Length: 217
Image 1: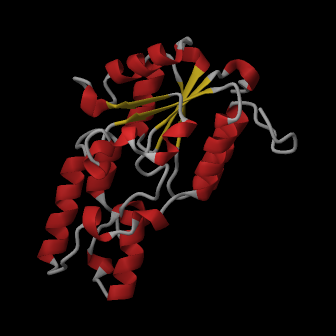
Image 2: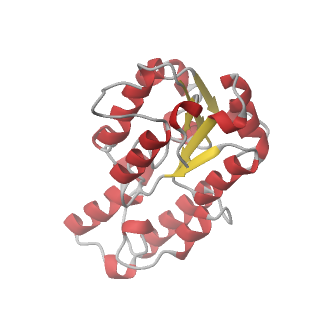
Image 3: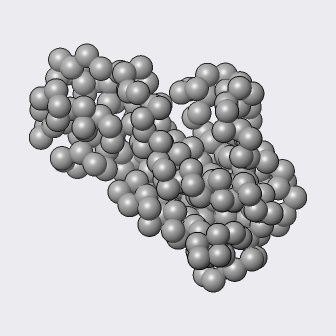
């Protein structure tokens, strides 16, 4: 779709988009530490197929379930490691994503966050002290709502916050099931491919009409 200036609001997921998904650095750590990666399913960048990750991307299990299964796999392999505790998250940000966020923040486009699980990683009420909050016009953590993505209620809530119609909003998420949830209420969506983050960002910027040669929206 050639949206041009039709898109008036960009709504971001966080996990896997703002920072690398936790299995990505785990694979690198596993290489360095000699983990048996040929027998250890670790998301889309692991050496073998991870059926649990695929199930999560399709909404059959949630991230809490998936994280627990990862912990169980590590324990079975006698590996002492906790993704929430043992990854230096300050080193895992996606530069292309944050450049896009800054470009959008400097434009008339409304920019928001709609996240399912940030509170589990950043703590309750994280948005009050989170320094990048300044780039966003609204932040919705579904920990404050009765329902999670891909139920329609969170998307309807964020659309209402934008003040625009659903078809004037685009949602970006690394979980296909969540993109379908946005589309079900009339939003546009961009699936964020963790294997090709730069192309995913380029697709979003094209959709909202950003021309890097003009350096503005």
